[in-house]
Image: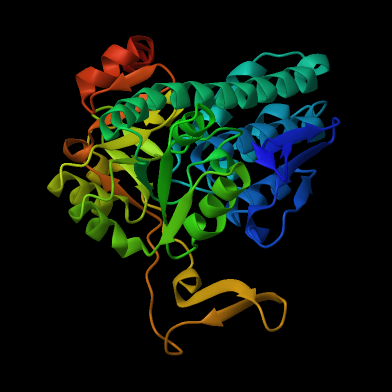
Length: 375
């Protein structure tokens, strides 16, 4: 997508020894790039959320594996060393299934690969995963665009009002994004639309990232407190909700940023369609009950107790405490929205009901492959 009129992806190789990313911890106040040279640096960047988002985490893990291959390609104990690299990368963010999916895909590509070809195969596979992520996001945008067009026809020229939670735009993937991909496709197609942007406490990815990237692309938007969405829906000010997903079960339960479940409840109560937009790599076909089975990441409580923003008087970033000193805090990173509250799931192949049958019909090959692996 565009930054100051120039196209960027969120991650790309810079030569053979460096992987370059957009440092999301410095947005929206500063646009800066970060160079990563080792799998440890990649793991730290994932853990510290210099890069984040389901698709991008997967691509980053693939490039982290590539950096590990560069280090160990000629080691006699290549396999155990790379097994350790894989485990370290997968431990960085436990909820997003794309990360483990990408690591396993890299491991499969490297299996029984001669030492002389390891670096080339790892680079090629990581690039394929990255390109595929961008293309799948583009396709999801086109499928979601049809929903926006249908609403626009009914509204006779009035803006389509979209609500989203957290950041599932191009910053969360390689390009285009998931929840925002239909928005970008609709805006580029000339549809009148407007996005309500949840601030998304405690890290404020909506305020810092979604608002920033929508502004860079010129999409009309308004930042709102997380708890304002239900009020907007009650008063007919939301036409559709688009959210992303870090892990989706085989029956359509959706794990997304904490607070998504509450948006789904409000949407159901006010008859507002609620769609999860995600690549097929985010579907965990081995799980049937998201509330019971999806691991929920618990992050540092300091993210709740403190907030970082731009200090206008000092002209610098500042972090301040927002609660009494010593106050205990809990920081659940995600929640699970049961399939019964999800109107539909949009993947790169189309739109499916949030049911086991619906997902299986849209992705019969992947469902069959999973059944073979998990009899």
